[in-house]
Length: 620
Image 1 (cartoon, rainbow, N blue to C red):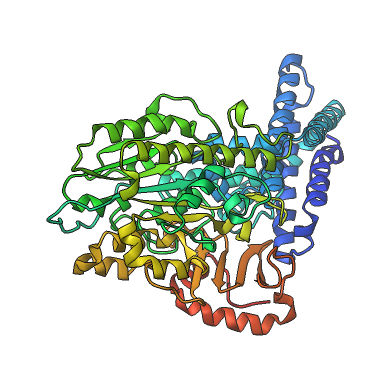
Image 2: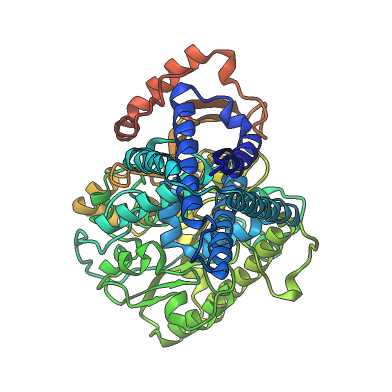
């Protein structure tokens, strides 16, 4: 067999891969380059063995030859599609975590892949697949049979035996330093192994054994409605100063009740992924904390359920079979749980149904209540999730850019929020209802080279909307402290301690002990203007460490690992609100010392980083 012909497909893919990822590759050291070279050898060994199996010889039917070659080219093209679509979206190769997410949220992942396949991308990948097919065809057609070639096959087999366990065991630590096909095969297999063993790359939520709360003697004086939006960033809302009129219903509501509404203009998410953020903000447990604590702390609606005659509900347009939300939110204190899979309604976007379908459910809950009953509920919306679909009547801003579709989705969600408020008003409940609105995380549209979320911690990803509506009696008692905090850094992790405080439950020593142990703070009293807020996607149980952001006043310390190297950033929003000037290179040693000092407040983060072999406070 003319072996050099079989190297051509691997060389073609390596050249494409290196050209597209050159900004990362040029930062590699010798260990990363060695990983990459080993993966090339691995591909060549497989190519040699496949060539031996497919070489023309007596007894091999032509259709078997052509079918095998077409399958090989198609599989290779598929792996390239997954590899590069993920790279174009996130800026990194698909990792073990990414494949774990694929197993859990298949539809959303495939939507991301499809979104990246522009006509140009499709042509490139199709061309590569056709070229690989042609090169393999030439290599096979010129194959030479004979016993003297068996030595090469044994050598290839020996290399595969040696390299397979090495690459499989190291793929989780490789930072994507493999050829696309090798990365695909071993990242997927490692994620499957973790899942079968019930651990690792993408953790699953569980049914919690939650702390019991003391029963209250009298009914709750107010109703409570928490609304959690999906992938909604603060900057694209009219009341946050956006140039488009994306929030007219909310704007009108705020204008009509200026003393009762508190808009927290500097609210930040605790995480940039829904599977971390929503469980966190509904329990008050930061994602970096011990996972067992997340399943012990009471859920948000269990605090008002301590009062008699309280009707509780969780109505979600979001899919709840993903990440095990269905089990996580199970509680004997929850009267009604409703989500996309149990609704019978079709998917509206990649991970949920139309938010409008929650309105009849909310109307039914309110209609069944007696005058003496109070409600405490969560609406988990989904309309601003990719790919940002809306009914045709709400396509105000047209065109292909994703930002237009996103703004349309925000305006549609605002319209539905207005209908929710109308339902409360019609039921005679609005004036005595606490309404808390926030989002799980934001969304990027190329501001820092990233579309979507999950990987970075820039402002467009972590800065989320947050507003609170209070009955007049609560405004008189707590309005002063709340008003101070509307211009200070707050977190959606403050949701639980604030609402527990509003309900007066902190008078109970057992409840006060819970809220005092939370990382979030009650917003009824002024928070420190230099308060530290941490955003991070993983915890010590999930083995996930994608980096972090640490906020202190206008400063933003950012960290992530790239190409096996620690990458730091420091931005000051006073002079640089768009985060265009990285201050870290000005004084890396001094900034590293300052960051190390600040991180002493978060020992769990240091433990997680050490477990993953990174040094986020070292600075370089």
